Length: 142
Length: 405
Image (tube, rainbow over all chains, first blue to last red):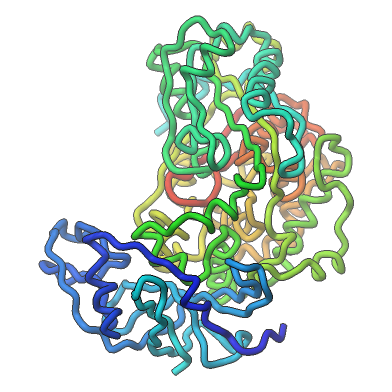
């Protein structure tokens, strides 16, 4: 199927909420710094951020700055804006984050046609302003 | 080792309302439909609804996506004199058939004597699943999923399906075959919603809602209610029908699956699976049986690829071979051969959620009972063992084997 350019969903229709466990991730994103939750004891990554390390049980967390690159693990091609129902080609992806083994993000990918997205494709982070002055990590074909 | 409660309990009654296209059940209320299903199940069992003293729910006692069942209200308004067991499995439709194991727990602990397991679903416009999911303000956890535009269950299943296609070369033709094979089972079912045979052209022309999944890979959106009555096998001897013995039943799952597509953190090979391997292994261990011993498989089919991935999880074929297995015709039902085709096991002889009706898994339970009673519309000859599963979703998921008495 031919879909054409993969677009990012408009940031002005996107909202998030945070809690004390997740807020450091979003504060870093505001500064255009991609991070992931890492256990402060054993160093195991986990996403989304949660209170306890499932590997060792520690409640210590740290938030290293990641390279901002990632690999597409899987994807879906969608053709309707979920808020408005209008024709709109976007590609939700699950990506494996470089520098954070086991940590994934769900995002949109752009910078190529939707039908050219593929598993294993290298991508780099691109920042999308969203509601309430938050910033969302999306990805562009590297 | 065999399960200590093997064959000690049985499903003795099944009851349902008519099945309605989403929203068409109005002006009936959801409570009216639930009451009819309970009364029909009791009539089928040959008991009075006043004998029900246990409630074993799943889906956190949800009735559809926004309503809740409440035992206090049900017993008071339907006229059950007392109840001595009221419990639910957590999460959603994954627990459907596991609720029968919950009923067994109540019965074997002598808490109660007749339990009802129940689901009612009424998708008025504001209650539609896709709408409920997409309209919710994202929680802090869901803020890592919803902004990507993954707003409906179909989007989420597509993500798993794509990975399965990548890892194993799974073909779109296999998804088409699942839809067509199960559609072929509804021709002579009066209550089924989709009954016309499905051509290749019609399937390929079905709109791509979340590539690689087409509209026809998505299940129906249905209104209606279904109830089943479980009791001890001793009591079952006084009921109207031959009991459907609870031979093995498990719910749960493993951490690698966890919240599943509400998380997307599953490592391979769990990501491209239905999350059922753990409970599948539990029921095989409980029973000493394996997939090849099943006479019929009622696999929760909210989306066609989840049938394929369950075939792998349960061991009907090896991991990654679901596409070839399906394309060899092995999920088909053929009355002329007594059911089985090409050495396979017929799947969803009732048409499933894709074609008959979607009441969050309960129709699979009804069909499993009818198959081991020997009264199914598409009866598998001499069916002794029926496998039924609860929906691939966040844990717990669940697995059940019913046995002919």
